[in-house]
Image (cartoon, rainbow, N blue to C red):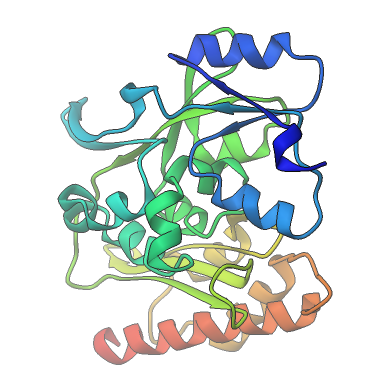
Length: 285
């Protein structure tokens, strides 16, 4: 199907957007920047019959902070561009891990068009591992009501929903912590990554703490909790790194494609983890 045969709708709010989607009998897609969809179409995926453009909905085009239960939370509208997220002071100062992650996504021109919501809504975006490490929540519309849940739970859902906001609770910085968001991609900037991995090491009263998430390519990112559990509450000097990387390789379950096999992706993820571990251990071990 050619682009000219696709009908474009414009919605004034989320309720109208959902009504349009429900009313059309043919295939339809919500769209803002459209950068992810462009990669799909260039790879031969058929254009939908209807595009429902969300650009007129201003409510979810802002970044702001709130005090919730005496804790600061950062709210990022799903329709905010990746470029704006990357440079916004609240993200730079309070969610630097997310800023680092966004900085690895495609090229500046793509980040100017693509939105944070679009990167997450496809469930394989390169910002997701960092957001999982940050214990992000999402605000979304399911067609009946606006709901709030953890990003981790939302990624497991099968039913359609419209992502509205990403919510991140401010986390206390520690001189004994180290966070990272790394990506290995193919040469072209506008292609799916091979591996994306993000994590945070810190030393707490009861020992080392690790939060780790990985994705890449067509793999839905997720927390690697078995790997985390091997590290958590251990002494930094006695943690068996070989055992940890072995568990990471077993737990990380990437999807292969025509270019890279599962085993290759697992080894890349383990190597990225080891590099970051050694950086942190040299400083705090």
